[in-house]
Every structure is written in C-alpha cells, then in structure tokens.
Length: 297
Image (cartoon, rainbow, N blue to C red; front, side):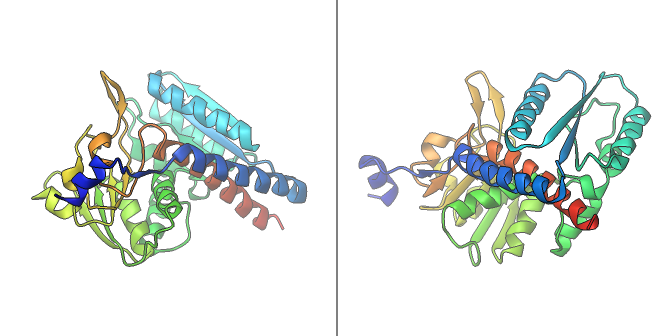
C-alpha cells in the first residue's frame, strides 16, 4: 500500500497555508511602519486606482483594495472611467498622477476594455509608482536580480512558501504557467533564492512526470481542477494561484480534495494567494513612499 493511501486511511491531510492569517500579520506590520513614516516625515502614502468600465469582478477587487488601504492608513483614490473612454484620456490622467506628489502608487485594474491596449497604459505609469510591478523597467530589474517594485502575486507566493519554514535554496520548483503577471516573474524570484526552476505550459509533454518531482509546485494555468494528486510530490508545497468562477462557486486550478491528501502544504481557494496579493500591494505602496521620503531628506 502506498504512503498516499495510508495517509488518507489515517486521515493525514496537508497543512493549510492560510493567506488571510498571513495577510493580517503583514498588514499589521505595514500599519506600524506607516504610522512611523507619518510621525517622522509627515508622509501619508497615497494609492490611486484607475477603474475602467463596469466589470463586476473588477469592482469587487477595487473595493477590497480600498478597505485594505483604510485599514493600514494609506490614502486611497479611485478614478472610474466609462468603458468607452479613449486611450488618450486615460494616458493623460495617468500622466497627472505621475506628477502628483501625494500619489505614491498607481494601479490600473485589469482587464481593460478591448479598445485600450494594456501595454500602453502600463508603460505610461512611472516605474517609481508602479506598485503592480508590471512596468518594463521593473520587469527588467527583476530579471537582472536588482531591487525593484516586484509584482504582487509572485511576491505573495514567495511569502506563503516562506511561511512553511522550508528552505527555498536547493529545492526543485515547478511553475505551471508562463504569464508576465505570475509565471515568469515568480520563476525569476525563485531563481534569485537559489531554487532550480522548471516552467511548464500548454505544450509541455507528460506534465505529471515533471510536476510530480517538484518540492514546490505553483499552479497558475487558469484551468479549474487541472491538477490532482497524480501531479503532486509526496509532502510538497503546492500553491494554487487560480481563481475560476464555476457553477459550484470559486475554485482554483487544483482539485483541492485530492491534492491535499498528498501535499505537505497547500493553499485554499479562496483564502490563499488572494489576500496576500493585496497585502503585497500595500507593502509596495509603502516602499514607494519610503523611497520618496529618502529623496526628500
């Protein structure tokens, strides 16, 4: 009988990496640092969020970010545009935010209407205020291993893995997904921490043969229930980045029930990566404000 079957028979399940608990801890630390920044330099960070159109999910995400800002002491500004707004109008507004000394972070909520090229919008944001970490300059610095504003979801993934107490250096890491938002940047961040990284995608042959050797498995494919216990190494750390809306509610890219019977650590959906991502956005806003404070000395 396999160890996996024995685990299930005696009721051993994976440890849950609770993103809400970690996010609460991080936000409490951020709130203390923000209070100190206000007392020492009279700086209250400002985060501007640009929302275009009426996508229901985007509106929920923006409200959650507003609540998080209010909790830690960041001034939050939301600018809503009609879905038919012109690209030039949006770019002009972003240019105003770039020059506004009260704004330390700028975030454009994705996705955007089809007539607005997201690359034009992201490239218009000042790299020093790019708290999403999407600007080409920040992406290039990340690739070179230099200090920069790192993308929030990959940054949150690293924090979740660190919560397990396992050393990242020397581990085999497998990332499913090669997007510029998650897959590529998180792979670079693991490499920076001396892991051996494999990136898998839709053209990867014998996917389970690759993923089942990974000590740390990050799933960011955008396909519900793509991964089950066949893809998971015994006792590994599994991070599910997927957020998929199905008839049965929100689900990740993993079959949580099956994968949790084999993994050592696992993130739930919802309540895993999502809350930590928001806390990383606040941390990036703090970092941008601290940088401004240095310049003002």
